[in-house]
Image (cartoon, rainbow, N blue to C red):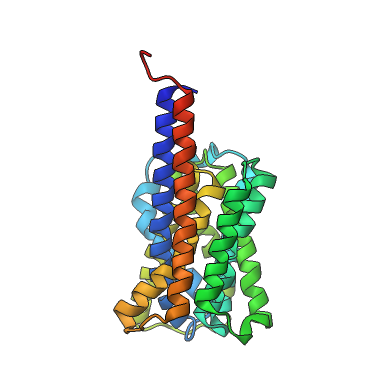
Length: 305
Protein backbone atom coordinates (compact mmCIF):
# COMPACT_ATOMS: atom_id res chain seq x y z
CA UNK A 1 0.00 0.00 0.00
CA UNK A 2 1.48 3.36 -1.00
CA UNK A 3 1.66 6.56 1.04
CA UNK A 4 -0.87 8.21 -1.26
CA UNK A 5 -3.34 5.35 -0.87
CA UNK A 6 -3.05 5.52 2.93
CA UNK A 7 -3.83 9.24 2.89
CA UNK A 8 -6.79 8.62 0.57
CA UNK A 9 -8.08 5.83 2.81
CA UNK A 10 -8.01 8.14 5.85
CA UNK A 11 -9.96 10.75 3.93
CA UNK A 12 -12.62 8.35 2.66
CA UNK A 13 -13.21 6.80 6.09
CA UNK A 14 -13.61 10.25 7.64
CA UNK A 15 -16.04 11.24 4.88
CA UNK A 16 -17.98 8.01 5.40
CA UNK A 17 -18.33 8.75 9.12
CA UNK A 18 -19.44 12.30 8.36
CA UNK A 19 -22.11 11.11 5.95
CA UNK A 20 -23.44 8.58 8.46
CA UNK A 21 -23.67 11.34 11.08
CA UNK A 22 -25.55 13.53 8.58
CA UNK A 23 -27.90 10.66 7.72
CA UNK A 24 -28.71 10.11 11.40
CA UNK A 25 -29.60 13.77 11.78
CA UNK A 26 -31.83 13.71 8.69
CA UNK A 27 -33.54 10.49 9.75
CA UNK A 28 -34.20 12.07 13.15
CA UNK A 29 -35.97 14.96 11.46
CA UNK A 30 -38.19 12.41 9.73
CA UNK A 31 -39.15 10.13 12.63
CA UNK A 32 -41.51 12.42 14.53
CA UNK A 33 -43.56 13.50 11.45
CA UNK A 34 -43.71 9.85 10.40
CA UNK A 35 -45.19 8.78 13.74
CA UNK A 36 -47.69 11.63 13.61
CA UNK A 37 -48.77 10.73 10.06
CA UNK A 38 -49.33 7.01 10.73
CA UNK A 39 -51.78 7.98 13.47
CA UNK A 40 -54.11 9.03 10.63
CA UNK A 41 -52.85 7.31 7.49
CA UNK A 42 -51.91 3.68 6.93
CA UNK A 43 -48.31 2.53 6.63
CA UNK A 44 -48.98 1.56 3.02
CA UNK A 45 -50.36 4.99 2.20
CA UNK A 46 -47.34 6.72 3.75
CA UNK A 47 -44.92 4.50 1.81
CA UNK A 48 -46.81 5.02 -1.44
CA UNK A 49 -47.04 8.82 -1.35
CA UNK A 50 -43.54 9.41 -0.02
CA UNK A 51 -42.07 7.09 -2.66
CA UNK A 52 -43.94 8.76 -5.52
CA UNK A 53 -42.72 12.16 -4.34
CA UNK A 54 -39.12 10.96 -4.11
CA UNK A 55 -39.18 9.32 -7.55
CA UNK A 56 -40.63 12.49 -9.09
CA UNK A 57 -37.75 14.43 -7.56
CA UNK A 58 -35.31 11.91 -9.03
CA UNK A 59 -36.95 12.00 -12.45
CA UNK A 60 -34.55 14.54 -14.06
CA UNK A 61 -31.66 12.21 -13.20
CA UNK A 62 -33.56 9.12 -14.33
CA UNK A 63 -34.19 10.69 -17.75
CA UNK A 64 -30.50 10.63 -18.62
CA UNK A 65 -29.57 8.25 -21.43
CA UNK A 66 -26.92 6.38 -19.44
CA UNK A 67 -29.30 5.50 -16.60
CA UNK A 68 -30.53 2.28 -18.21
CA UNK A 69 -26.95 1.18 -18.60
CA UNK A 70 -26.29 1.91 -14.91
CA UNK A 71 -29.21 -0.32 -13.95
CA UNK A 72 -28.15 -3.10 -16.32
CA UNK A 73 -24.55 -2.97 -15.09
CA UNK A 74 -25.44 -3.08 -11.40
CA UNK A 75 -23.35 -5.86 -9.82
CA UNK A 76 -24.73 -8.98 -8.15
CA UNK A 77 -28.41 -8.82 -9.19
CA UNK A 78 -29.45 -11.29 -6.52
CA UNK A 79 -28.11 -9.07 -3.75
CA UNK A 80 -29.65 -6.02 -5.42
CA UNK A 81 -33.07 -7.68 -5.20
CA UNK A 82 -32.46 -8.77 -1.61
CA UNK A 83 -31.46 -5.21 -0.74
CA UNK A 84 -34.70 -3.89 -2.24
CA UNK A 85 -36.74 -6.36 -0.15
CA UNK A 86 -34.83 -5.57 3.05
CA UNK A 87 -35.18 -1.82 2.58
CA UNK A 88 -38.92 -1.99 1.88
CA UNK A 89 -39.62 -4.38 4.75
CA UNK A 90 -37.52 -2.37 7.20
CA UNK A 91 -39.35 0.85 6.38
CA UNK A 92 -42.77 -0.79 6.69
CA UNK A 93 -41.87 -2.44 10.00
CA UNK A 94 -40.55 0.82 11.47
CA UNK A 95 -43.75 2.75 10.72
CA UNK A 96 -45.88 -0.22 11.79
CA UNK A 97 -44.04 -0.35 15.12
CA UNK A 98 -44.47 3.37 15.90
CA UNK A 99 -48.23 3.00 15.47
CA UNK A 100 -48.26 0.99 18.70
CA UNK A 101 -45.09 1.93 20.58
CA UNK A 102 -43.56 5.18 21.80
CA UNK A 103 -41.00 6.46 19.34
CA UNK A 104 -38.27 6.19 21.99
CA UNK A 105 -38.92 2.45 22.40
CA UNK A 106 -38.78 1.82 18.66
CA UNK A 107 -35.56 3.82 18.40
CA UNK A 108 -34.10 1.72 21.22
CA UNK A 109 -34.70 -1.47 19.27
CA UNK A 110 -33.27 0.03 16.10
CA UNK A 111 -30.18 1.14 17.98
CA UNK A 112 -29.41 -2.52 18.59
CA UNK A 113 -28.52 -2.43 14.88
CA UNK A 114 -24.84 -1.50 15.37
CA UNK A 115 -24.34 -4.66 17.42
CA UNK A 116 -25.92 -6.77 14.68
CA UNK A 117 -23.92 -5.01 11.97
CA UNK A 118 -20.65 -5.41 13.86
CA UNK A 119 -21.25 -9.16 14.12
CA UNK A 120 -22.56 -9.56 10.55
CA UNK A 121 -19.73 -7.52 9.03
CA UNK A 122 -17.20 -9.96 10.45
CA UNK A 123 -19.20 -12.99 9.29
CA UNK A 124 -20.40 -11.90 5.84
CA UNK A 125 -17.95 -9.18 4.79
CA UNK A 126 -14.77 -10.45 6.39
CA UNK A 127 -14.16 -7.13 8.16
CA UNK A 128 -11.77 -7.29 11.09
CA UNK A 129 -13.59 -6.37 14.29
CA UNK A 130 -11.40 -6.47 17.37
CA UNK A 131 -12.37 -6.49 21.02
CA UNK A 132 -11.84 -2.75 21.35
CA UNK A 133 -14.42 -1.87 18.70
CA UNK A 134 -16.78 -4.50 20.10
CA UNK A 135 -16.41 -2.96 23.55
CA UNK A 136 -17.17 0.53 22.20
CA UNK A 137 -20.26 -0.70 20.34
CA UNK A 138 -21.64 -2.48 23.40
CA UNK A 139 -20.86 0.52 25.61
CA UNK A 140 -22.75 2.75 23.18
CA UNK A 141 -25.78 0.47 23.36
CA UNK A 142 -25.66 0.53 27.17
CA UNK A 143 -25.70 4.32 26.90
CA UNK A 144 -28.81 4.09 24.73
CA UNK A 145 -30.57 1.93 27.30
CA UNK A 146 -29.65 4.32 30.12
CA UNK A 147 -30.85 7.33 28.13
CA UNK A 148 -34.11 5.92 26.79
CA UNK A 149 -35.13 3.54 29.59
CA UNK A 150 -37.39 1.31 27.49
CA UNK A 151 -40.88 1.02 28.94
CA UNK A 152 -42.87 -2.07 29.88
CA UNK A 153 -44.10 -2.11 26.27
CA UNK A 154 -40.67 -3.49 25.37
CA UNK A 155 -41.96 -7.04 25.77
CA UNK A 156 -45.04 -6.88 23.53
CA UNK A 157 -45.74 -8.12 20.01
CA UNK A 158 -45.22 -4.63 18.53
CA UNK A 159 -41.77 -4.72 20.13
CA UNK A 160 -41.06 -7.88 18.16
CA UNK A 161 -42.01 -5.97 15.02
CA UNK A 162 -39.50 -3.26 15.91
CA UNK A 163 -36.77 -5.79 16.69
CA UNK A 164 -37.39 -7.56 13.37
CA UNK A 165 -37.14 -4.20 11.64
CA UNK A 166 -33.79 -3.54 13.30
CA UNK A 167 -32.50 -6.91 12.09
CA UNK A 168 -33.63 -6.14 8.56
CA UNK A 169 -31.96 -2.74 8.78
CA UNK A 170 -28.71 -4.36 9.91
CA UNK A 171 -28.79 -6.80 7.01
CA UNK A 172 -29.56 -3.87 4.71
CA UNK A 173 -26.34 -2.16 5.84
CA UNK A 174 -24.34 -5.33 5.18
CA UNK A 175 -25.83 -5.92 1.71
CA UNK A 176 -25.35 -2.25 0.78
CA UNK A 177 -21.68 -2.53 1.68
CA UNK A 178 -21.44 -5.73 -0.38
CA UNK A 179 -22.81 -4.00 -3.52
CA UNK A 180 -20.92 -0.74 -3.01
CA UNK A 181 -19.83 -0.77 -6.64
CA UNK A 182 -23.39 0.16 -7.63
CA UNK A 183 -24.09 3.77 -8.64
CA UNK A 184 -25.71 5.99 -5.99
CA UNK A 185 -28.68 6.68 -8.25
CA UNK A 186 -29.42 2.97 -8.72
CA UNK A 187 -29.16 2.31 -4.98
CA UNK A 188 -31.53 5.11 -3.97
CA UNK A 189 -33.99 4.54 -6.83
CA UNK A 190 -34.17 0.85 -5.99
CA UNK A 191 -35.10 1.63 -2.40
CA UNK A 192 -37.81 4.06 -3.52
CA UNK A 193 -39.23 1.62 -6.08
CA UNK A 194 -39.33 -1.16 -3.49
CA UNK A 195 -41.19 1.01 -1.00
CA UNK A 196 -43.52 2.16 -3.79
CA UNK A 197 -44.41 -1.45 -4.63
CA UNK A 198 -45.15 -2.31 -0.99
CA UNK A 199 -47.12 0.89 -0.54
CA UNK A 200 -49.16 0.31 -3.70
CA UNK A 201 -50.12 -3.15 -2.42
CA UNK A 202 -51.05 -2.03 1.10
CA UNK A 203 -52.45 1.47 0.53
CA UNK A 204 -55.94 0.48 -0.70
CA UNK A 205 -56.62 -1.10 2.70
CA UNK A 206 -57.93 1.70 4.88
CA UNK A 207 -57.21 4.55 2.46
CA UNK A 208 -57.80 8.04 3.86
CA UNK A 209 -57.64 10.90 1.37
CA UNK A 210 -55.12 13.42 2.76
CA UNK A 211 -55.73 17.13 2.82
CA UNK A 212 -53.23 19.46 1.15
CA UNK A 213 -51.21 20.01 4.32
CA UNK A 214 -50.86 16.32 5.09
CA UNK A 215 -50.16 15.46 1.46
CA UNK A 216 -47.35 18.02 1.45
CA UNK A 217 -45.95 16.57 4.66
CA UNK A 218 -46.11 13.03 3.24
CA UNK A 219 -44.21 14.23 0.18
CA UNK A 220 -41.66 16.03 2.36
CA UNK A 221 -41.04 12.81 4.30
CA UNK A 222 -40.23 11.19 0.95
CA UNK A 223 -37.67 13.87 0.09
CA UNK A 224 -36.05 13.66 3.52
CA UNK A 225 -35.87 9.86 3.53
CA UNK A 226 -34.42 9.80 0.01
CA UNK A 227 -31.63 12.16 1.02
CA UNK A 228 -30.89 10.13 4.17
CA UNK A 229 -30.78 6.91 2.12
CA UNK A 230 -28.29 8.53 -0.24
CA UNK A 231 -26.05 9.57 2.67
CA UNK A 232 -26.10 6.08 4.20
CA UNK A 233 -25.39 4.42 0.85
CA UNK A 234 -22.42 6.67 0.14
CA UNK A 235 -21.15 6.23 3.70
CA UNK A 236 -21.11 2.45 3.30
CA UNK A 237 -19.25 2.82 0.00
CA UNK A 238 -16.49 4.81 1.62
CA UNK A 239 -15.93 3.01 4.91
CA UNK A 240 -16.41 -0.43 6.52
CA UNK A 241 -19.88 -1.05 7.92
CA UNK A 242 -18.47 -1.91 11.35
CA UNK A 243 -16.82 1.54 11.49
CA UNK A 244 -19.65 3.84 10.36
CA UNK A 245 -22.80 2.09 11.60
CA UNK A 246 -22.04 2.57 15.34
CA UNK A 247 -22.49 6.30 14.74
CA UNK A 248 -26.20 5.59 14.50
CA UNK A 249 -26.15 5.90 18.28
CA UNK A 250 -26.21 9.66 17.67
CA UNK A 251 -29.95 9.28 17.04
CA UNK A 252 -30.44 9.75 20.76
CA UNK A 253 -28.30 12.90 20.78
CA UNK A 254 -30.49 14.48 18.11
CA UNK A 255 -33.56 13.41 20.07
CA UNK A 256 -32.25 15.40 23.04
CA UNK A 257 -31.33 18.47 20.98
CA UNK A 258 -34.48 18.56 18.84
CA UNK A 259 -36.69 17.77 21.83
CA UNK A 260 -35.30 20.77 23.67
CA UNK A 261 -35.32 23.18 20.70
CA UNK A 262 -38.71 22.19 19.25
CA UNK A 263 -40.73 20.98 22.23
CA UNK A 264 -38.91 22.57 25.15
CA UNK A 265 -38.13 19.18 26.71
CA UNK A 266 -35.37 19.52 29.32
CA UNK A 267 -33.16 16.40 29.43
CA UNK A 268 -32.90 14.65 32.79
CA UNK A 269 -29.82 13.10 34.39
CA UNK A 270 -30.16 9.55 32.89
CA UNK A 271 -30.58 11.05 29.43
CA UNK A 272 -27.45 13.15 29.79
CA UNK A 273 -25.45 10.26 31.28
CA UNK A 274 -26.49 7.94 28.46
CA UNK A 275 -25.69 10.58 25.86
CA UNK A 276 -22.24 11.09 27.39
CA UNK A 277 -21.53 7.35 27.15
CA UNK A 278 -22.67 7.33 23.52
CA UNK A 279 -20.44 10.27 22.64
CA UNK A 280 -17.50 8.65 24.41
CA UNK A 281 -18.01 5.35 22.55
CA UNK A 282 -18.28 7.09 19.18
CA UNK A 283 -15.24 9.26 19.89
CA UNK A 284 -13.28 6.15 20.84
CA UNK A 285 -14.11 4.44 17.54
CA UNK A 286 -13.19 7.55 15.56
CA UNK A 287 -9.94 8.04 17.47
CA UNK A 288 -9.04 4.38 17.09
CA UNK A 289 -9.48 4.57 13.32
CA UNK A 290 -7.27 7.66 13.24
CA UNK A 291 -4.55 5.91 15.25
CA UNK A 292 -4.69 2.89 12.96
CA UNK A 293 -4.22 5.16 9.98
CA UNK A 294 -1.25 6.87 11.67
CA UNK A 295 0.38 3.51 12.38
CA UNK A 296 -0.13 2.55 8.74
CA UNK A 297 1.50 5.84 7.72
CA UNK A 298 4.51 5.05 9.88
CA UNK A 299 5.01 1.77 8.06
CA UNK A 300 4.88 3.43 4.62
CA UNK A 301 7.74 5.78 3.72
CA UNK A 302 6.61 9.08 2.18
CA UNK A 303 7.32 9.79 -1.48
CA UNK A 304 10.99 10.53 -2.12
CA UNK A 305 12.15 8.99 1.18
